[in-house]
Length: 236
Image 1 (spheres, helix red, strand yellow):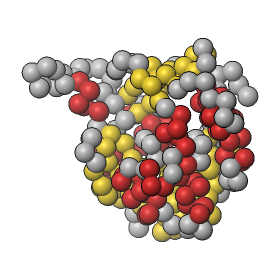
Image 2 (cartoon, one colour):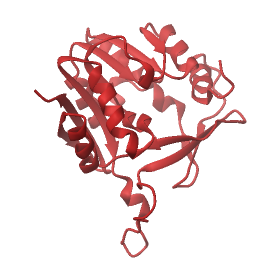
Image 3 (cartoon, one colour):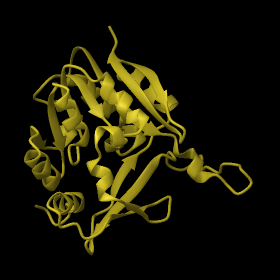
Image 4 (spheres, helix red, strand yellow):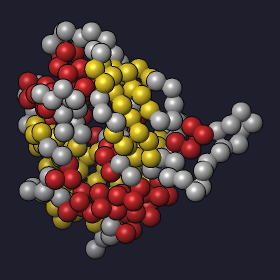
């Protein structure tokens, strides 16, 4: 396992009962935050409404992208769905296999040899696109993995609120990068990951790029903290 597989190391430790600490998340737009590992091993009744709605909409053969510990995949498998769980993290895939899942270590953008009825991108899975100018390509790739009548289910957040001033106004650098482009690092057990880019996209921007990818885009649900669930389908 790569020394840079911070998430995989943490998931394996927690799964084996050797958990030492939480993951520290370092970002370019906020103070350091703690990611409790038990959050990545939740049961169905512990999921927020948005994630529960997404899982309820899944059908047919499902590709769970960025599946992590396999939380969503296990719930879908228990419902009788055929699920393939993929993640770039070697450690995460090891954990998923030990949990009885059909799991594969791969980069989503390089994965192209199967077709699915549902491509599931939860916990801001659209972030894998990294940059707004890569989003259309990302959606095109996801669409190419769909069977006829298939769907992409994804969630994201409008993080404009992160730039709110004390007087309630929102300050954005309109000449800079899109405000939803964030740089992260993860720290665990005295090891620090390389920086990686992550995209949060508001629904309007998602719609714009969905049109470019020849996809219908429907808003399914909005939570009370600027998050939303969207369903994308192929245009006829």
